[in-house]
Length: 174
Image 1 (tube, rainbow, N blue to C red):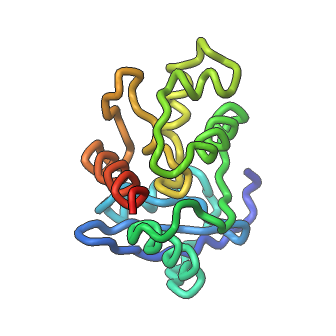
Image 2 (image 1 turned 180 degrees about the horizontal axis):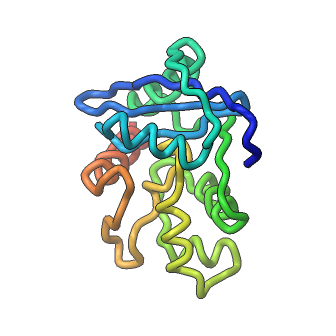
């Protein structure tokens, strides 16, 4: 990334007992934090990925994203329509695009994702790329589970992953 100044708008989105930092660039959503992450971790992530960023708390700019997240948690939204601005390696970006194809209420394994991108031996690399997903929930990395059906690691914590999977199964039935 070039070193010119970038404005990053951010706000805290709250759902039940969880608080999430959500942030956007001019181009789209760039970050959804783990739940209840300290501000210092949020700021550290932004500084690492956008070194010349100016952080501006701006609830109004993030309101459309907060509405979509709220609708998701209410079970009335099954996919996200607003733009994201995620930067990673070409491989990471390929994985994040593949994650968007997993239907609401469904899961795939890490090896399924490796097959999907036609790199069946890259299962560990797929896991690393999924772990680097900067926009939890909106790019649904929570829909990836172990080949044996186990709830595996998740940046938001395995309790949150289980919650999101249960939410989708319950809301999909209605």
